Image 1 (cartoon, rainbow, N blue to C red):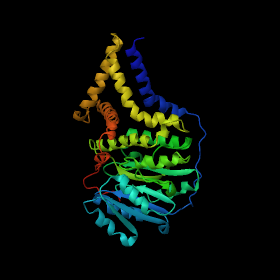
Image 2: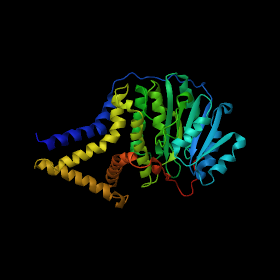
Image 3: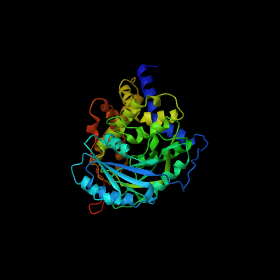
Image 4: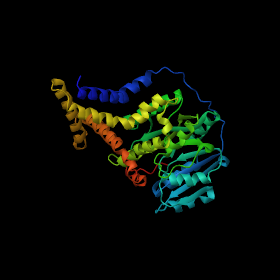
Length: 387
């Protein structure tokens, strides 16, 4: 068999495993569910840490949201860390001082530096990490904290629900296919033993496990919890702990995707032990490391297909590749009513995600601080911020 055929089939098989083989295996993987000893009466003391850069649009509503959480107020402390904000963020935070909200100001240095400043001020048993934009369900913190009655739990995350621009929630909301898949995987991993990351706007950790983040860390929601995982503790998913957010605007979330994927490369550099065998290694390889390897496998397959021996199969493969790229490139110009619009949109989303994964290695060559930016959300012009 010619080398081009071997390379094509091998890279295609690896890509197929990441895309379809692993989800099928996870669906039918026989395992004994590892339950969590959750106790609804367990309410340890909590410090809420919220790093903010120029968040005046959402901050007042978010602090009000946090102050109305169904959690014992004498066991809750809220710390807002302003990451070099130049708008009214700091003034808004100071206006809540009488209600027990603390403000920490630091020069612009990225989320990791801001969180490190917050961690130095944190007290209590748990740290609850959140972001400025999303609304937290009143019972979310109580559900997160209840999981820590189980001494095997190091970190807990909840479910982020995406809203329509008009504010519709639940099954009626326009949650994208990838995010629904991610939530399903998290539920399976949590039941088997542990996740590998959390949702950055909704997770809690034992304070004693929170170590200062390396400078310019992009993915605190992976680096911090994985420190607990590598000590033998679990990162679990609790779908009863809920936060709400609007979907990001089409075409504006590229920087967020790049930041997330680049943060994954950083995480593996910080914790090279993840690349060696561990309890969840097969799942880690397929679901996490595979996300970064997939574009390389697909690119190898595309290049190898150009050198396949002349045959009807070669031209069929090349025609299929050409159709995929054409659909992805034409998608923005196609009207919503076009019969193949949905297929074209899926092609474009898949291409964009893999191009972002491919280019995410730039984190090793540019300043990670340059990857931060404001994420715009898709909500009606007259819709208020989440509150």
